[in-house]
Picture 1 (cartoon, rainbow, N blue to C red):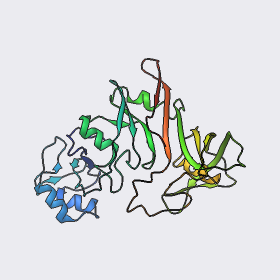
Picture 2 (picture 1 turned 180 degrees about the horizontal axis):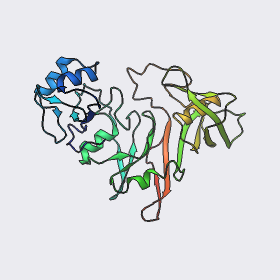
Picture 3 (picture 1 turned 45 degrees about the vertical axis):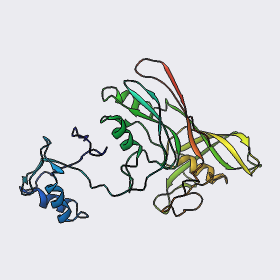
Picture 4 (picture 1 turned 90 degrees about the vertical axis):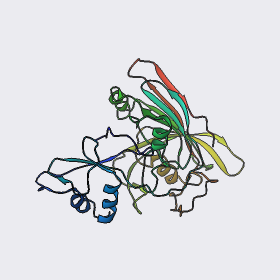
Length: 297
């Protein structure tokens, strides 16, 4: 459930509900048992700092007791994160939508070690938009357009466009030139989880669940080419998997065809994939909306 409590450094309060059947117990004991990866001492320090709150937003004392059904809110301790030295650009804002041109390397939402250095947290903090919610996502290593909802009242109408495939999404990628590949073409395959866990792969002899249209935009003099990609479906890593399967993996892709060590990321070598265009009929006023990224590969 979305907290109505104020953000802290752009990060909202997390929520946990005491499960049914739980006997009355100390809030500290409940949290330490429910989240065993966080030490009791850490939880105690959070209580002391007023970071554990009741449903009405009041800080709980370290000896507070909770019962089944009680809602608890807490603010996560934010580790020091490497600064991602690129800025997003807002290219459209009205009362319903925010369209943002995301740089490479910046995740859309908090994930793993990236919390403050995520697009959502940066925007909430900079613009004071506590109700901001992404309508879709693109990979952290992909640059380009991301649409956000500003208004909870109209959010569902925009969210429904994506599963109904009523949003045209066009990407561009730089990848090796393969002279024997007949383009334009359509790649259809069954994409499933691969190894290691963060990768996806194509499954042979399975019903396709993904589809991408691929065409050549230009040949470059360095053995590379620029391609236009239109995903009809929206599977995880779909464009990266499809181009890799065709023998033209995206330049600087850290996962395909090989997993690279990204602990010390080279910000000078971004993956060459860009979410170039978003287009749809606005469900509120019926106008056609078309947005273009201002970034280049």
